[in-house]
Image 1: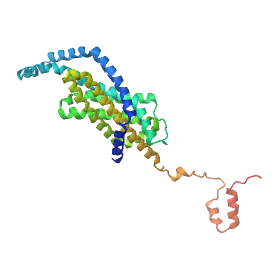
Image 2: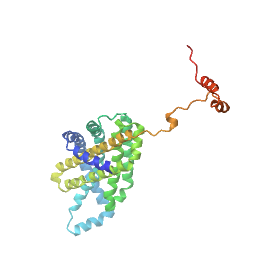
Image 3: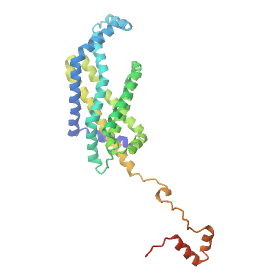
Image 4: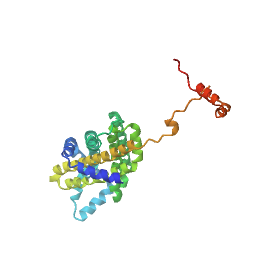
Length: 312
């Protein structure tokens, strides 16, 4: 717990560094460009599709009649954009995570290493190809869990908790690997991820809950169409900054744990430290050893037999 809290406040302070703020803008520019392109090409198509699905849904017909009865007939027009935005939000989260993972996490990890762990050896336990596979496989598992738990999102408490746990697990898997890939060996990485699994998972869930906050900005952008163009990039930047904070948090936590692991004394048995002396054919028998204490001449001869003679 002490390491968790210490890493947390250090990561919060590092977020105020101009270098960190500058790095957070790079993924933002990329994500905003992709989001704008997708919205420009498919926004009208997506809205039309969702509205048609809502109109054709027999189960929702009574909802629309009830809204018209209470004097809210125009609320139906807001539901389609909200559904599109909430469906698009997980994609933005994943894109932000991937962008931070590949653009920011290595740079932020080196920043932490330079300032706090200058003498930490880099063992390069994870390659770029291995990192890509690890991220892709973890992403598939997270999306699978997202699809399987989607019906549970209709329950209000689970709608807040399940995404946080899923994104938290994904953040833990991706961030912990990326931070340790350069500095830890394969054995060290596996040891740390097994030993500090609960700590890593707690950090991922906390940052997952922090990442749920920008959803309010997305909802505001849907309700206030005039501010949509401004609020959506703000929400994306908040997502990116949250993941940047998680990168710093994981970097401080993982590198501290790695340094402590390498500082641990090696536990080895006597047989591992001292090589076993191979049996010698000329070694004295038990009867000869018993006579060594009584016969000095025999002791001298036995020692001479055991120790090899060197030629002049």
